[in-house]
Structure formats: structure tokens, C-alpha cells
Figure 1: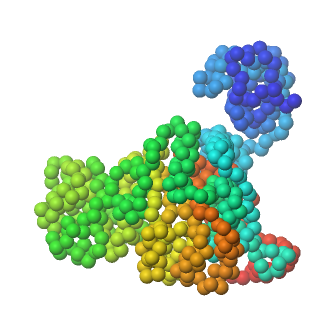
Figure 2: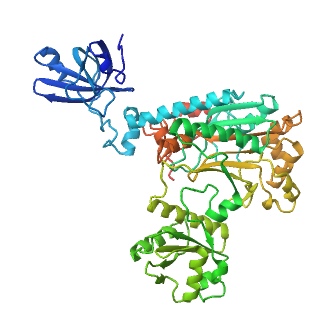
Figure 3: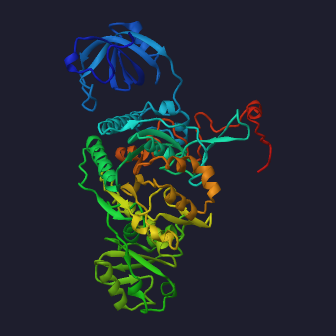
Length: 588
């Protein structure tokens, strides 16, 4: 056999045992007539000892080893003279008697250690080496443990794991699809699923009652730290349930995961906040509750009090109190102004008021407002001496709140208030059913067109669809949307009405979703579901900045796999088989 033990399991109680280990050379240290090799595998590191006085040929062979050589060694477990209390195996070493090089290694392009000298692109190109690093491997081990816990939790509650197809029809209503040409059906294309949404609803019509799947999904959208073109969902659907049934069950699952993985007890029950309240207080439908700085509306406070045209013409004026930051310098305030003016945020400017520790007040709008007005702002905002108030204004209340949210999060980062070891979770409910799309110039479904309207708001569908609330819910943790779902429409007539409001002709609705609407005619049960982003969930519990670090083979921010050099051009023979014409030399 290649090994009798792993490199992480031997202890002082094993002293005297004859063992065989296999793994990779982490490092080699030469000390006179002794050579020490740290041997690493997935389970840990064990020190090997080679003694020139005992076996000179073996000693010389050990000195030819290089980093990342894959080797096998046989020897005796012995107590170390110089122990290492930072390693679980630090009390012992293996006195080597035999050494076999299973595979030599080129010098790796970066060090295979937690604090590596390799940049992101280099590590992604050699991802198979990056995965040897303990800190990266632990992320995948945590991901594995989470999936096992989730499967066991759902299995114990009568959920059945069912696979749905990867090659489906395109549904342009959501994000952009990845499409796959069909050789046997020239000119026609499959799409890779953005989610198994309609398929899991059909499973409910089929009487499966409780379904789940840990499933790959695909969206051709712009990337960022918490997005990849392919991602993994914990996808679930249930029959004969209402909103509180779904929230209650999956809150229990989240509580179990936080306890098992991080030893954290989430409050019971978790807070629920309406979408309208979240936007009003935090300017976000995924508020980070780890710190305060709630928005204070100041339109009434400033109205009619001065001749500052920016405020007088604004429909919304909102501020945040930044504790202890009245001492911010002009340079720091200019940095914040530049921050909110960035195209990604889009504010036109920033107003500040410093309530200094000595009781004096300094503001960028001193010449427009009296000391009494600024004192009123202090009272309304609840600011104390030593605090800084930052204010944004604009014509569109929600747009300005979103800008103020970006500023709030920036200040939270600057002040170190977004601790990755603190977890604040809540449910956001009562989303708008529809949202206006400037690109499409029409109402779009906020989540998807199968979301149940709040029954109280169904009469508004004809005249005021923008005021209709959805029976939808998102699970939010630390300002990140981890999961979301909704009650589904199971009535054909109501589903037809939804398509009508969304601007679908009956013919288009039939062409794209006729299979689902027809299924509803055969006794569709009331049903609801939810999907968690597994990559995001793992990254939060692992304390990571990017979901890439918990995915075995991720894409970069350009959607490229630099290791496999994908996407890439196809051979002309393949293009001909697919009857696709591509001018590879056409200038952009």
C-alpha cells in the first residue's frame, strides 16, 4: 500500500510504530548531518528525519528533493527533540528508513503556503497548485460539510432530491441566458438554466410535495466578487404551505448551519422587515445590521430655512450620523465627496456638518443656514458632540437612498464596523411585485413572473400594478442576499393576468410558458419555494471577501477560466457541424 497513515494523524502515542506516509514536500531543512523534510497531504504535515550517520545514501537522496515533489516514505514514529506546538503532529517525527520519489516537480510558480507570493491571476492559472494550500482547501472542506448538513436536514424533513435538466428552453424575461447550439436541430438553441424555477413548479404539480436540489445555474451577466457565470443553488420547493411555513423551516436550517459551522446561536425568531422599511431606513433591500447609521430624513428640517437651492429643489434629503468623526480633515471629506460622485454611485455632491467635541459647529452649508437650523439638525439626527453628519439629496427618493446606502457602507468599512465574525440575519418581506425597467421601458417582475401577488393587492393589478406587493421573502446576512423565494401562482387565470401586466401577448405567453400554464389546469397545489446561493453562504461562514475562494475552479472577473483558457474559438469543423457562420477576422 502507498500509505498506512495520513500526515495529520500520528501522535506521541504512536511512538515506535512502523508507518508509511505519502504526500508532497512542503519544505526541506539541512542542519549538518541531519535533513528534515515537512511532508504535507490533505490532512496535515508531518516532519521526516534523515540521518547521514545512520544511512548516508538515504540522506543524500533526501537532499535531492525539491518543493512539491510527491514522495513516499517508510520509517518509525519517534518523539521529536525540538517540539512544535503549532502543529497537531508537532510532538513526533518519522525517522526515515526508505524513500521513494513517486513524481518529481518543477519549481512551483508561487509558494504553496497560506501567505503565498502568488497574485490572483497566477493562482487561478495554476489553480490545481493553489488548491494544495491549507487555507484554500479548508474552504472546500467547509463547503462539503455544509452540503452534507443541508442534505441531511432536508432529507429528515421528507424532501426528495431530484435532478432537473441542464439543457432547457430560453426564457429572456430574466438575466441573459447562456445558449447552446443544437447540431441535430440546426438554427435552434438550448439555454442553460438560470434556475430550475418552472421545472420545480412542475414537480409540485406532479405531486412530489417536497423537492430540493443542489444545482448548477448559469447567468450571462456582469461579474463581481459575489457573482460567477456559473453558480450553485440550494433549490427547494414545497406544496401546501404558506409564507410563514417556508420562512420557519428554512430559518431553522440556517440556525442549524450557523450553530454547526461557526458555533453561533441566531436569535429566534429572526427579525422580519418589509422592503419599504428597509429602503427607508437603510436604502437597501439587503441591509447590513452589524452597525447603526440609520437614515434620518431631513427635508422638513431644512424646508424654508435657507436659500440653498440644492436642498430647496430636492424631493428627498437624508443624512447619517457618523459617530466620533467630527475631526475628519478637509482631505478626508474631499475623498468622501469624490466617492459619492463616482459613476457607480452617481451623487452630485456631499454636504457635511461637524458637531465638534468643543461644542462648535462647522459645515459646508454654513453660509446658507443659521446656527439654529444646524442645531435643529443635531437634535433631529440624534448627533452628539464629536459626531459627523453626512447628507445627500436628490429628486428621486429611492435613488438618493441607494446612494446614501453606499456612503453608509463605506463609513462602516472605514470605521471597522463590518466584522466578519459578527452575523446579523433577517428576512426582507413585502417586496414590490413589479419594478420599472429604464432599458425595457416597461414594468418587469421584481423576482420572476410566477410570484404570487399579495391577495390584498390583486385588485390593484389593473390600475396601479406598481403598488402591488409580492408574497416574496429574502434571507439576508451582513448586507448580503443569501437566499430568496416566494409563494407561486398556481391559478392559470391569475398567471395569465401577470403575463398581461408584463406586456406579454397571449401568443408569446403560450410560446414561452404554455407548458406551465397547461399543467396548472390539472389540479396544481398551492406551492412555494426558496433558493440559497451556496457559494455566497459558504463565503459568509468562511469569512471570505469573494465567492471565488470557495469554488474549486472559478472564473475571473472577465468570465474567463485562465487555467483552461476558456471561452475559446471553435474549430471550423465544429462550426460547420452546427451550421454556425462566424467571421473570426471581422474587426470590432
